[in-house]
Amino acid sequence: MLRKIIIEPDPILRKKCKPLESVNDDTRKLMNDMLETMYKAPGIGLAAVQIGILKRIVVIDVSKDKEKKDPIFLVNPEITYRSKKTAVYEEGCLSLPGHFAEIERPAECTTKFINFDGKEKELKAEGLLSTCIQHEVDHLNGVLFIDYLSKLKKDMIIKKLLKHKKEIERIIV
Ligand code: GNR
Ligand code: NI
Image (cartoon, rainbow, N blue to C red; front, side):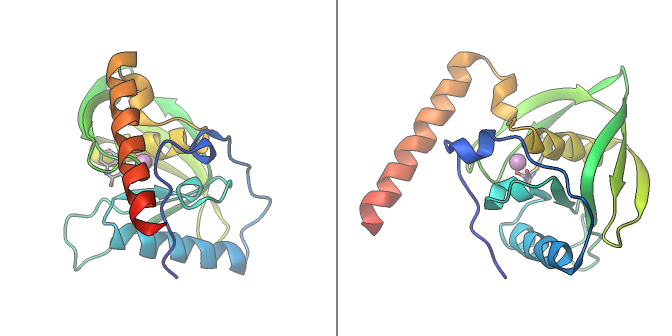
């Protein structure tokens, strides 16, 4: 089932998400909905909070080939290692449509998480996957990439998004 993606500014995106006690069929159903919503957008990652569910769940697929899907499901992800070396990527966010910025983060990270089958796993990542994992874990803590920009740039983006939201509201109502 396709879900609606929440756009900034929205207080939901600033909430801290709750860890899951277990992975059951409802969790798996939700993860499949998240994946469908992410592919349709299209995006390379999605946190549950972006569809209004305050749980620590993330889906990611950074595979280039659209034919060969390679989804990753992360429940209760915890970054256990961050490299000193950093990398800069041009980041986008499905909750900040039309806005992009270069963000510097640790180049490599290791993440402990529970997978689709409910098993505990660890994943060492570099490149775009590493950046994406850090971007998604930020979502679970109510953090967006614009929080790393100057107040001026951040406020400008929020203002534009708010204007865009109000215009859409005006058309619908
Ligand atoms: O689709 C997305 N692209 C992206 C590009 C660079 C760094 C992070 C991302 S994640 C983003 C989808 C999204 O908003 N995930 O929360
Ligand atoms: Ni995002």
